[in-house]
Length: 130
Image (cartoon, rainbow, N blue to C red; front, side):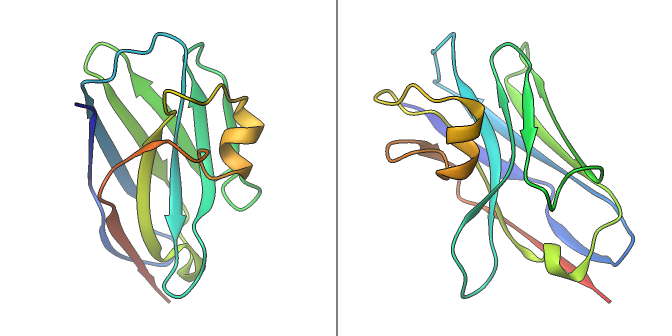
């Protein structure tokens, strides 16, 4: 059974930093995409940053230069370091792993919100105050 569990959300003032972590268990694919997505209240879920099994990354324009996605393969943890946070970054942040029926490029995974059969975590709230 695949499980993804996010941690590290919280409240911070604009300009501050937060680090999110996603612990992945039961996921055995050797070639994959994983990533971070977010959903502001009342809005659709959107891609933030994604990484593939080769370590390639892709970011949404809103995240470029401020957020960094990384992965500890040994510990099976996905990270998102967020710097210079803005109020518009306020959202529930989710991690996702490519599902069994999807063969995704990073662009597809980011733009199509991980595809239709991705594995998802339960989400962690990030609130940025001005």
